[in-house]
Image (cartoon, rainbow, N blue to C red; front, side, top):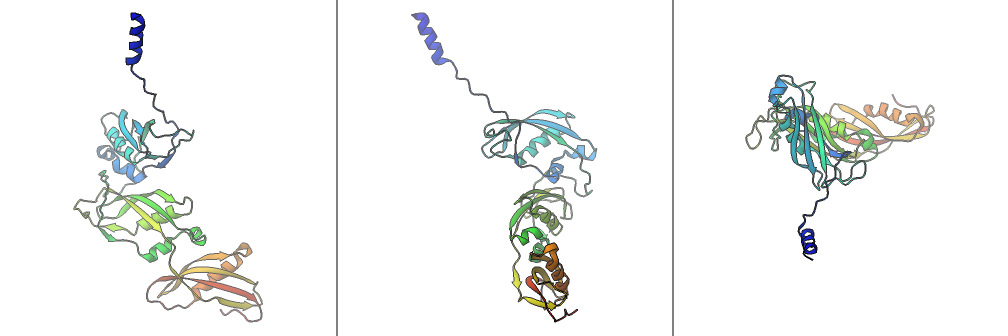
Length: 310
């Protein structure tokens, strides 16, 4: 009887073994650090001495997909700062809720090997400090006309709007260097390429709004692309015995010096016949404007007796 009671007591007080954490081996990343952000966290001494390295982290994954409670398990070469750099860069990873093998990532663990490669090019005045600039004081920023000029053609034709974010290093002059695309939505519509074109139009003061130096820091540039506001002109009808009945619509920039930066918005003719004609004729239009702006016009081509004016 006493033996039975002792066994029962042992069962009552026996510790409950927690289930082993899920090991994530095939993560799907929602965001990863950019090349500029890797450069910004690169150990300064190792960068100046042209030393590459690696480190391995053991991390947990929270409900938002962030890596938390990370610990450095390996660093090579030891003492060169790559473990600390890997720990800092881990904050910029975000994992999707399901891995490639359909495992829920929240509450799981992951082993993260991170390799630090020397950047191919680095402006001498942009030695990274690892500081993320949150309050830049901009001297110059893109204008509305600049946004229109880089708007992806395919997205414009399909009347799509989108967003993209670039990450860049900042030189001591406040210019952006080593920019790379961090994210774009929707993917594959050209907004990532467009945001890279925009980065050359930004320049910040040597000090942030709160008085911190910007040289060597990293900054993220999120941009929302909205379809350019444009004026619609009346149809232009052209008749000639050499033409085929067709039509095409183009979007162009009008400025005091003339019309340029045109693209075809709509052309359903084989081999782009009407669109090609419209692009040839649009720059010949004479439009008086005080400041640059965009317009849309449809060219209607008809087979007939009146010749095209050249």
